[in-house]
Length: 215
Image: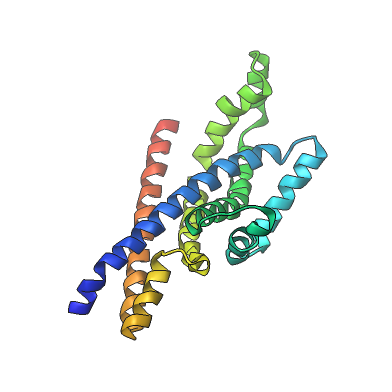
């Protein structure tokens, strides 16, 4: 028990890193996902093809591959990133693909008459997107967005491959020092469970709030 108490600061440091990197990565993924979703139906074919390639790459490539390319391959092209920054950027770029598909589906669900009505009122295409289509799409997508956010949180466990001191890396370090396996990994499993439960509850609260606003 004393050994576990002594390890608490390490667990807290790993938890803090996991939360911070995952949250920042989610913000980038959601923001970039909206941009990609808006660009997917572009009539400028090179742009739409580039966006589709990004989405497909994120769908088939494992996160570990993206992290290796950024952290270990980046220096060959003059891109020097710390493990912390590489983790955030990797999660953001990797998660943007699935979020783009989610928002694309949400935008497609908005009746086309809404845009046409906005254009008749003199709104530009950009204004129609920002003030009519996007708000409605966001109200339709909280459940899949929460699911994707939870998936990204769990994917953050592989950030240890670039030496980032998140929960999995901390568990490995404690295990190598104490030669205990069950306690460190069971502890981080419980911490991940708590984080997933928190995200799920926040998602349900957001759904209820958007439902009240939409009614």
